[in-house]
Structure formats: structure tokens, C-alpha cells
Image (cartoon, rainbow, N blue to C red; front, side, top):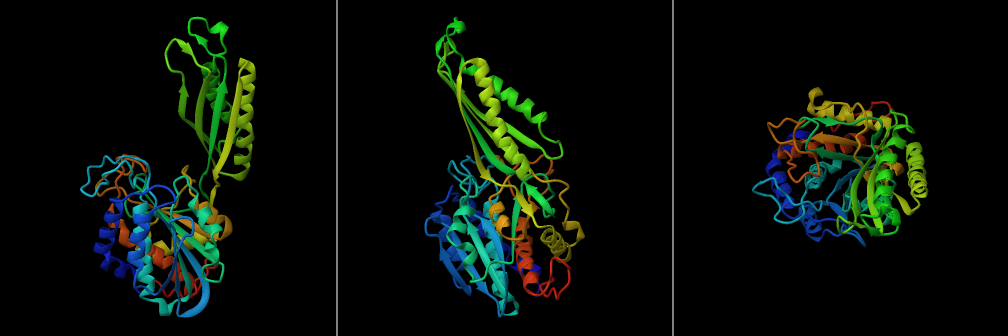
Length: 409
């Protein structure tokens, strides 16, 4: 089976679907229009399709012609609360945007379903397609797992793969991955400092929560640099800070929130307890009170070493050596595909998709209202999804690299 050529033959259809999805961005766990579009694209294929009970997920099973293992392929579907400013003729006319490329992921996964369905009699095993809502902070993967995703074929999947496009940082069409940690854990620190309000001219008659909160922000950064190994880093960024109503009034409260990223379970546990203690210590020093809450969002995304090496070999063999570049270190973004990889061996791959002719190092990054993605990667993305499943189901062992490899291009 020549999946790459088959994928390129459907390139126009993939571009059409991606652009139609881009025009209807939906946020969170309820994506009715996106779900409807996915179901329409899958209609007529030999798939066992079911939708989520409490969320707008789509789960589809392709039964191979012979019994064998199960491979899971994931594509997320949700957008972001970002007002698009790309100026593209298919830009979303709303305050939401597919600024992270999930419209490409959904399109590539539907393409893979079409490719594999055309060759299902040659597959020795089943493919489980996971169309997931709510990746952007809503933990959609956890919801799908709770609804029985891994039991969809009657056999727990033997491997799981996902692809994530990047609007910057990688040349268009170049895939990357690595064994071990590939994406960071994501957590949020929420802090409310309570003091005693008063007149700005007489701070000694008040207890200023703004000064205490500012001290906490600085102390947290210093504490991190003196606590964590630079080769197992933690990144803390204060993204919101709110206090007061007027320049000459000392407010009663100050509130800030910080994104906290880490790359190992050990670092995640230490930063969880340590950030709260830092805030409490500063509060005591300033004579104010504090509520500091550390919420764990997503764990570290950890690729199985053998599966990552297998995925790299698949890309090289299917597309050419020049289309793969190993990631030298983990990326500081986070993903709820980590939930799946906590349950199954597998790998997440990145795919460069900056606009044609753009400098990848200067292109607007994912989540920017100016982020653009190259439609030219869609066919090869669909082909790589399909190749990963086909080779896994036709005898290639990721731990030894041996087997029939009948899915080769």
C-alpha cells in the first residue's frame, strides 16, 4: 500500500476540510458543529462510530481484515478564545480561533481514517481513532478515558500516537520527537492576598496586599532558581495580577495567577508544595493573610523510548531522512495526550507547519492571533498517522525494528 501517494491524491479534500473547520472554531468540551463535520467526513467508511456521552467526542474503530493488536491515533478538535488577526480569506469571524492547529489535527486524522479504511483487509488488527474535544485546559482526554475509550475495540490498545503541528520553531513539513519527556507538566498557582485597606498617603495605617503580592512574585522566581537543577527545570510565569480601583487607595486584596511548567514528576511534586510555602512565608513577613492554591492540570507527556524510535523510523522511511529532526530537549508546552501515554506505550510527534516561505524562527507562535499554518503538511500528516498504524499492524516491532513493514511507501 502506498499511503503517501494516496494521501496526496486527497490533498484538495483535506485542504477544504481544514479550512471549513477553521471557520467554525469551538472551545471546550462541547463542539457540536465540529463533531457534526467529523461525523459527516467519516460517514460511509467501514467504521464503528460512537459519540461521547457527556462531551462532543467521536470514537471510531476500524476492524482489520485479520485479528491482531489495536493502535490508537489521536486528533484534538477544540479551538482557543482568541480573536483571529491573520487576515486569511478563511479566517474565523468570531472571538475564537484555531490558533493551535487542532483543525489540522482533525483533518489529518480523518484523512488517515480514509487511507486505512481503503486497505483494511491488509491490516492485522484494529485502529482506534480518538477525536478529542477540550485539550486546551479542559482535560478532554481524561473525560474520554473515563467514558471507556480504551475498551472501544474490546482489546486495550497496544500503542498510541499523536501529531501536533507547530506554526514556528520547525521548518514546514519536518517531523520531530524524542524518547522520554517530550512536553512539560502544566499547573496553575492561584494566590489571593488579603490585607487591610486604607489611604494611599498613610500606608502605615493599612496592611498593603499589593506590596506583599509583588514580593511573592519576585520571591517565587528567586526560589525556583535556587531550588531546581537547571537540567530538570521549572518555568513559572505570572500571567494575571489584579488589585485596586484607584491610585490613592490601598485595596483589601491582591490576586495573581501563574502558569507553572515542569518536566519530571519529582520537580512537579516539589514545586507544588514549595510555591505555596513561599507565599505563606512572605505573607507572614508582611502581616497579611494568603490563600495559595496549586492546581495540577496535565502531567508530563512522556514518550516510550522504543515507540519514539519507531515513529522516527516510520517518518524517515515514508517521507525521507530530511523530513525528520530529533527534538534535542522537551518542549515547555503541555498536552493532555499525557493521560493516554500514562496508560499506553506510544509517542507524540511534532510537525512543523509555518506558512510557506516564512522563517520558522520568526513566525508567530501557536496561540498567537497571528498564527498561520501551512496546508501543504496535511497530506503527509495524514500519511504518517496511517503509516504508524499500518506498520504497527503489519508486523513491525518497535522494540526490535523487525517485521514485515507492509505499510511502507
